[in-house]
Length: 215
Ligand code: AMP
Image (cartoon, rainbow, N blue to C red; front, top):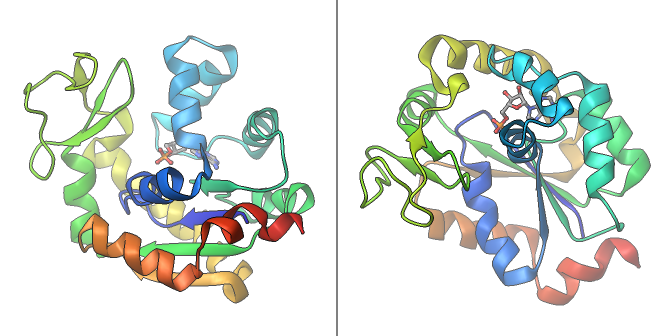
């Protein structure tokens, strides 16, 4: 089975996929995380992408597709997080693997803004915190690796507005593209109840998670 997590920036796509990954063994493919990792390691593709990311724009489809293909070794068992983000990316993905369900996480504009402006990320390991909802017990350092916590360039208020308008124009049309596979989940509740809703609506079992699209 392959799943896509779709939703505006700040919907918690990464957070909501964690349980599915731990419990059912999905492989998490977050294009945002992969890009940030490439930037940290000063990779050429990452540095090219950073120019777009810092402005809240989408990285060109060609770069994203090249990157995602190098990460995919099999046909199923993936959770795509933050990918696809355009119709062209979606139709390219259709040619690589089948998509079983698309989980659409939705929430209000105010909650999105609060989540994004308060987010802090560890510069070493990438773990995310929130100054209000999930602060680090070590204040400005990461609880896991003691790395410094920073605010993503694209989580600054004027860039956030740009990301949200890019989402409306370029990514939201995917709701129509995937309308037959769409599972809608309101993403402002607690992680546990959203997880349970997810698992129930997808009708997940370990066997199904790992086998369905390969059969
Ligand atoms: P995210 O962590 O998913 O919010 O992504 C952060 C930024 O990375 C986005 O604002 C884009 O600039 C870039 N990005 C991530 N995934 C994609 C994608 N599938 N297509 C284009 N740009 C992307």
